[in-house]
Image 1 (cartoon, rainbow, N blue to C red):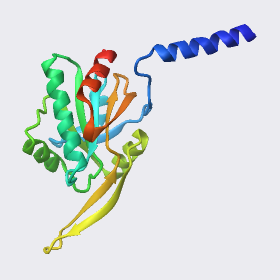
Image 2 (cartoon, rainbow, N blue to C red; image 1 turned 135 degrees about the vertical axis):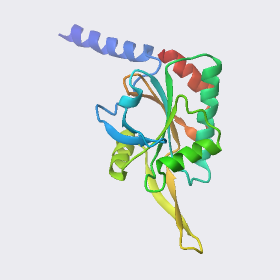
Image 3 (cartoon, rainbow, N blue to C red; image 1 turned 120 degrees about the vertical axis):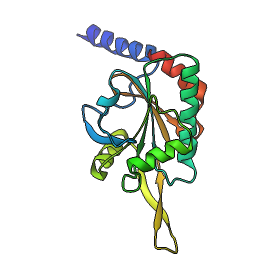
Image 4 (cartoon, one colour; image 1 turned 180 degrees about the vertical axis):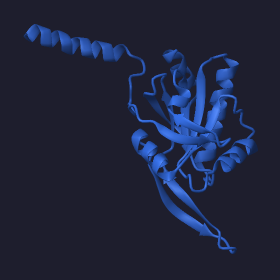
Length: 194
Protein backbone atom coordinates (compact mmCIF):
# COMPACT_ATOMS: atom_id res chain seq x y z
CA UNK A 1 0.00 0.00 0.00
CA UNK A 2 2.85 2.39 0.89
CA UNK A 3 4.53 1.69 -2.46
CA UNK A 4 1.32 2.42 -4.35
CA UNK A 5 0.81 5.67 -2.45
CA UNK A 6 4.43 6.71 -3.07
CA UNK A 7 4.06 5.86 -6.76
CA UNK A 8 0.88 7.96 -7.03
CA UNK A 9 2.51 10.95 -5.32
CA UNK A 10 5.56 10.78 -7.58
CA UNK A 11 3.36 10.39 -10.67
CA UNK A 12 1.28 13.41 -9.64
CA UNK A 13 4.33 15.63 -9.24
CA UNK A 14 5.93 14.43 -12.46
CA UNK A 15 2.79 14.98 -14.51
CA UNK A 16 2.15 18.44 -13.06
CA UNK A 17 5.77 19.46 -13.69
CA UNK A 18 5.68 18.39 -17.32
CA UNK A 19 2.45 20.23 -18.18
CA UNK A 20 3.57 23.60 -19.52
CA UNK A 21 0.36 25.46 -18.74
CA UNK A 22 -1.62 23.74 -16.02
CA UNK A 23 -5.24 24.69 -15.45
CA UNK A 24 -5.36 27.83 -13.28
CA UNK A 25 -9.14 27.89 -12.94
CA UNK A 26 -12.02 25.89 -14.28
CA UNK A 27 -15.18 28.00 -14.53
CA UNK A 28 -17.17 24.79 -14.91
CA UNK A 29 -20.16 24.21 -17.12
CA UNK A 30 -21.99 27.48 -16.46
CA UNK A 31 -23.58 29.09 -19.51
CA UNK A 32 -24.05 32.86 -19.81
CA UNK A 33 -26.70 34.39 -22.07
CA UNK A 34 -25.10 37.55 -23.40
CA UNK A 35 -25.22 39.81 -26.46
CA UNK A 36 -22.40 40.81 -28.79
CA UNK A 37 -21.52 44.18 -30.29
CA UNK A 38 -24.05 43.56 -33.07
CA UNK A 39 -26.83 42.89 -30.55
CA UNK A 40 -26.89 39.17 -31.42
CA UNK A 41 -27.75 36.81 -28.59
CA UNK A 42 -24.89 34.46 -27.76
CA UNK A 43 -24.17 31.88 -25.12
CA UNK A 44 -20.74 32.11 -23.53
CA UNK A 45 -18.55 30.03 -23.49
CA UNK A 46 -20.46 28.03 -26.12
CA UNK A 47 -19.63 30.88 -28.53
CA UNK A 48 -15.94 29.93 -28.55
CA UNK A 49 -16.11 26.20 -27.86
CA UNK A 50 -13.27 24.26 -29.44
CA UNK A 51 -11.00 27.31 -29.82
CA UNK A 52 -8.30 28.94 -27.76
CA UNK A 53 -9.51 32.24 -26.33
CA UNK A 54 -7.63 35.40 -25.42
CA UNK A 55 -10.00 37.36 -23.21
CA UNK A 56 -10.05 40.67 -21.38
CA UNK A 57 -12.49 42.57 -19.19
CA UNK A 58 -13.25 46.24 -19.75
CA UNK A 59 -15.59 49.16 -19.38
CA UNK A 60 -15.67 51.76 -22.15
CA UNK A 61 -15.43 54.83 -19.86
CA UNK A 62 -12.12 53.58 -18.47
CA UNK A 63 -9.45 56.29 -18.67
CA UNK A 64 -6.38 54.10 -18.34
CA UNK A 65 -6.17 50.30 -17.93
CA UNK A 66 -8.90 49.20 -20.38
CA UNK A 67 -7.53 51.13 -23.40
CA UNK A 68 -4.07 49.68 -22.67
CA UNK A 69 -5.43 46.16 -22.28
CA UNK A 70 -7.52 46.49 -25.44
CA UNK A 71 -4.52 47.75 -27.41
CA UNK A 72 -2.49 44.80 -26.13
CA UNK A 73 -5.25 42.46 -27.31
CA UNK A 74 -4.95 44.13 -30.74
CA UNK A 75 -1.17 43.60 -30.76
CA UNK A 76 -1.62 39.93 -29.84
CA UNK A 77 -4.24 39.49 -32.58
CA UNK A 78 -1.93 41.08 -35.18
CA UNK A 79 0.98 38.81 -34.19
CA UNK A 80 -1.23 35.71 -34.24
CA UNK A 81 -2.42 36.58 -37.75
CA UNK A 82 1.13 37.35 -38.90
CA UNK A 83 2.29 33.95 -37.64
CA UNK A 84 -0.77 32.26 -39.21
CA UNK A 85 -1.99 30.70 -35.98
CA UNK A 86 -5.58 29.54 -36.42
CA UNK A 87 -8.52 28.70 -34.16
CA UNK A 88 -7.97 31.64 -31.82
CA UNK A 89 -10.82 33.87 -30.69
CA UNK A 90 -10.59 37.18 -28.89
CA UNK A 91 -13.29 38.18 -26.44
CA UNK A 92 -13.76 41.41 -24.49
CA UNK A 93 -16.44 41.38 -21.81
CA UNK A 94 -17.78 44.63 -20.37
CA UNK A 95 -18.41 44.50 -16.64
CA UNK A 96 -20.44 47.73 -17.02
CA UNK A 97 -23.53 46.52 -18.88
CA UNK A 98 -25.61 49.49 -17.71
CA UNK A 99 -23.46 51.84 -19.83
CA UNK A 100 -21.89 49.48 -22.36
CA UNK A 101 -24.71 48.58 -24.72
CA UNK A 102 -23.94 46.66 -27.92
CA UNK A 103 -23.90 49.97 -29.81
CA UNK A 104 -21.42 51.51 -27.35
CA UNK A 105 -19.17 48.43 -27.64
CA UNK A 106 -19.36 48.56 -31.45
CA UNK A 107 -18.35 52.25 -31.41
CA UNK A 108 -15.55 51.48 -28.93
CA UNK A 109 -14.16 48.87 -31.34
CA UNK A 110 -14.72 51.08 -34.39
CA UNK A 111 -12.90 54.09 -32.95
CA UNK A 112 -9.91 51.82 -32.33
CA UNK A 113 -10.19 50.27 -35.81
CA UNK A 114 -10.23 46.76 -34.33
CA UNK A 115 -10.51 43.68 -36.52
CA UNK A 116 -13.72 41.97 -35.42
CA UNK A 117 -13.31 38.95 -37.71
CA UNK A 118 -12.29 36.87 -34.68
CA UNK A 119 -12.92 39.36 -31.87
CA UNK A 120 -16.24 39.63 -30.05
CA UNK A 121 -17.32 42.23 -27.51
CA UNK A 122 -19.89 40.98 -25.00
CA UNK A 123 -22.37 42.57 -22.62
CA UNK A 124 -25.63 41.47 -21.07
CA UNK A 125 -27.96 41.74 -18.13
CA UNK A 126 -26.15 42.93 -15.01
CA UNK A 127 -26.88 39.82 -12.88
CA UNK A 128 -25.54 37.59 -15.68
CA UNK A 129 -22.38 39.71 -16.09
CA UNK A 130 -21.84 39.85 -12.31
CA UNK A 131 -22.16 36.05 -12.13
CA UNK A 132 -19.60 35.61 -14.92
CA UNK A 133 -17.16 38.04 -13.26
CA UNK A 134 -17.41 36.18 -9.94
CA UNK A 135 -16.93 32.83 -11.66
CA UNK A 136 -13.75 33.91 -13.47
CA UNK A 137 -12.30 35.91 -10.59
CA UNK A 138 -12.64 39.44 -11.95
CA UNK A 139 -13.30 42.17 -9.39
CA UNK A 140 -14.89 45.45 -10.50
CA UNK A 141 -16.00 47.97 -7.87
CA UNK A 142 -17.51 51.35 -8.68
CA UNK A 143 -15.11 54.05 -7.58
CA UNK A 144 -15.10 57.76 -8.34
CA UNK A 145 -17.68 59.49 -10.50
CA UNK A 146 -18.05 62.69 -12.49
CA UNK A 147 -21.28 64.69 -12.76
CA UNK A 148 -21.57 67.00 -15.75
CA UNK A 149 -23.50 70.29 -15.91
CA UNK A 150 -26.30 68.60 -17.86
CA UNK A 151 -26.78 66.13 -14.98
CA UNK A 152 -25.16 63.22 -16.79
CA UNK A 153 -23.08 61.07 -14.46
CA UNK A 154 -20.12 58.92 -15.42
CA UNK A 155 -18.61 56.57 -12.89
CA UNK A 156 -15.33 54.71 -12.98
CA UNK A 157 -14.36 51.28 -11.72
CA UNK A 158 -11.47 50.01 -9.70
CA UNK A 159 -10.97 46.63 -11.33
CA UNK A 160 -8.81 43.63 -12.05
CA UNK A 161 -6.28 44.29 -14.84
CA UNK A 162 -6.34 40.98 -16.65
CA UNK A 163 -6.05 39.17 -19.93
CA UNK A 164 -6.73 35.44 -19.71
CA UNK A 165 -5.83 32.54 -21.94
CA UNK A 166 -8.52 29.85 -22.08
CA UNK A 167 -8.17 26.46 -23.68
CA UNK A 168 -10.63 24.73 -26.04
CA UNK A 169 -12.55 23.35 -23.04
CA UNK A 170 -13.05 26.79 -21.45
CA UNK A 171 -10.47 26.24 -18.74
CA UNK A 172 -8.28 29.19 -17.78
CA UNK A 173 -4.65 28.30 -18.42
CA UNK A 174 -2.94 31.57 -17.57
CA UNK A 175 -3.60 35.08 -16.28
CA UNK A 176 -1.61 38.08 -17.49
CA UNK A 177 -1.51 41.72 -16.47
CA UNK A 178 -3.59 43.18 -19.30
CA UNK A 179 -2.12 46.69 -19.38
CA UNK A 180 1.48 45.50 -19.69
CA UNK A 181 1.39 41.99 -21.14
CA UNK A 182 4.44 40.53 -22.86
CA UNK A 183 3.15 39.65 -26.35
CA UNK A 184 5.97 37.13 -26.95
CA UNK A 185 5.06 35.31 -23.73
CA UNK A 186 1.38 34.88 -24.58
CA UNK A 187 2.25 33.85 -28.14
CA UNK A 188 4.54 31.11 -26.80
CA UNK A 189 1.79 30.02 -24.41
CA UNK A 190 -0.78 29.90 -27.25
CA UNK A 191 1.59 27.77 -29.34
CA UNK A 192 2.16 25.40 -26.40
CA UNK A 193 -1.57 24.68 -26.23
CA UNK A 194 -1.98 23.89 -29.93
